[in-house]
Length: 388
Image 1 (tube, rainbow, N blue to C red):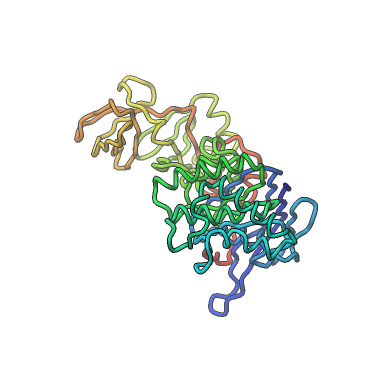
Image 2: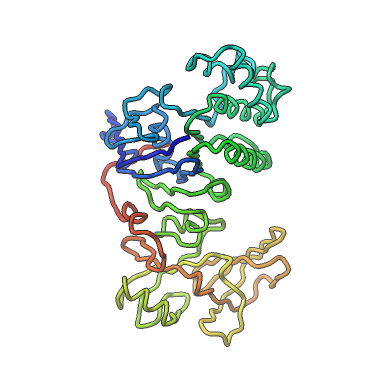
């Protein structure tokens, strides 16, 4: 096993039509030995490009990559000690599952046929596909093909596992099951793993830490809890969470946030923190997640009048779609809370879960995050970003 060190890495593509395309912009990241790190971001954020540079499938324009103490910038992919699981599984259609799993190992090692066969059997047992080894990919379901592709990576006993959206082609139920399987295997093997996905649910449920990437730059690095509860900036806050965070344009006026939908009076504790970064008259964006808005009495402090347009039952919860002063707002309440559609009601924000972002930079002035996590978040680039 080994750590992965990414130091100020940049990837630029030269395109005859579009000029220089900046795919990855000065990314620095330390992945600890045995850690499961997920890189998440929208299409075009550079996450797959970054993973492919670790794998050796893309050249590095600038910066340094290490696996353990070894610089791998110029090391061939087969010599890096990594194994990659692709989105489309990349199985040879004319080979059986057994041959698919053993082929790469035979090419890159001097193990005997007996030892290779033993590793394949062990990996197949771990993946639960012992009875599928003599079938070709065309005879296997999507889930079985994914298991074969993962098994092929396991038999190589790599220092680092790389996963490029391996579950995106599976149906929803199977994706949930395979997430659990991949977590179990990673914990059992203890192999350092870097997992790329656009699915925030995968990132939140599988990771030791999450890296949020946008426009080729790191927006935040942290545990799933930190990313969700302490978003470094407006992009992270909006990208992570479903339904997404509610946001309202406000202006700081004394101890009050003044907006079109409401006036919100800050407590002394929150006002002190806000004053460290913002001044009177500054334009800010107030953020609050749907589950942190509660039904209230009209006499409560900071009570806000709203109109219920739609109540959407989703089983254990209800989503309430409100209008407040002409602005839309989503609220999540328990399933037994069922206000009538078309009626007026009163809500309040849970101030302990309030977020406040600077309009100019998007920075969360109420988040306790490391400065390094925000260093790239405030950066700007005039170079176009590449698609993943």
